[in-house]
Length: 250
Image (tube, rainbow, N blue to C red):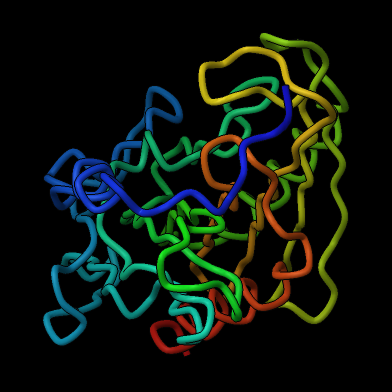
């Protein structure tokens, strides 16, 4: 059985995507389950619209809001659907453990969005090429740099693990010139069919972790319905993510 084809018609896909994307993060959207200590008492989640965004430091007693404009906005030739809110706990990937959870009270806000992307020359009737699950964390103090340091160490310790279907391998490398610092994680796992049965070969997905000032974004790039993502798009996704954080943090 081969890896699923990407050229299925879009029948039923709008309903599926609507179901996946419906609903904004509520008051619990900032809790990523990353430890006993949750976000600070002034934390909040994503603003429903870019123009509604405000930002105030936790030490000033104000609320920290993450605007929609802080998220990656892909170029039109790659954009299959507009980004929609999702739960942070659903957006963050997991490998050997909870490597990407924030933990600690240095987090002042968090929010997540999901979008679908395509290849530039894909026909309109094609299903998406892949999906981006993106989380943005706002930190205070040295929290952002501390988070990157912890994630880098945790991923380095997770070289492989067992999952249904076989061994999953994990490789990480720095992304030079991306934000203030960045990490690219490539995950390879045995391929499966739509029904979860084993298929030929392996599939890949990638996780980008990027810091800009006091904010960090985690972007989980996955192929559509169990297929591989396109590693060649990592730089495009990273640039879009940095532009979003820059527009908010700089």
